[in-house]
Image (cartoon, rainbow, N blue to C red):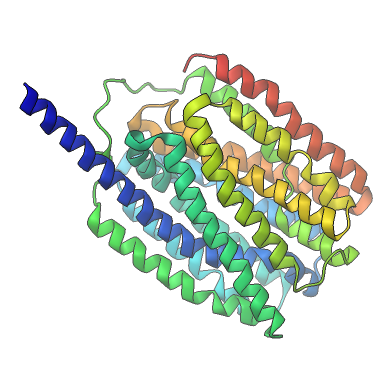
Length: 397
């Protein structure tokens, strides 16, 4: 019996090591991927402005991109569960997501640039649910919050580096087009590491022990309550292209500094993901309520402040994004059975995206008419999520 116990413990150790390696590999993919599209997103707002787009157009394009980017996840999540082709769907999404970015260098009209921005979001929509489902299997042994937090930290390391690369290009007077073209390099690196991960772990489901929990036709009530809280946070969160548009229009910072501000937010995002991920494994969803309280303060600082206050606002914006990209995803994995997670992540992200679109579009319109109204809407929507999150915490899964 003692020998069997030691053998079981050894197998668990191997499983944990394999799970960590898988999370790190996908983290490297996300690092290079985020270098690509977050580097691009740091300048898409002012790029659209240079091409002649209005603030309303910037808000709608950013919001519609998120709507497509999250709405299609419902389909890709369902298809990944139905077909079991998690890797194939993930790879297709990454190709579409990453190769749309360098093509922005060839856009001469804001309509073309807007189409490519939406195409990039479409690719992300396709690959995220199956990828998150695969990650959920690996994070079972190492802790959901820590696993997703580690992945998000690596993800945001790339999101930190990408804007800095673009900022360096702009500093050397390379122009927006050159900045987009340079991002082809990390795009190709991301796709290369993705192939390696696929070859090493063709069946990530094996990283999670079989569960006795039976799948149901629907999702539990707590899942829908949680989705309502997340929707409020999404609606109140200003997309960075609108923030960057504001920086350029009001001359809060120069064009060279805009990507740096975004990089600061991404650096805070990475650190927040690790911290909140660990806290989530220990205290649960109440830590997300704390993150929502902190991030609600970004809007007045960003839209009313000068250089220093706007920088502080971007740091708080990064805190919220770090929590959203780590804790929010980790919580979903604990609410549904393994064979329904692709669909669950699809439903979750679709709801998130719809309300992100509605909020972004409304804030783009409010910006043209009344910045204080934009700020009030952003703060109230985010704070309204806190009672729901606390209710979810007390509800049985």
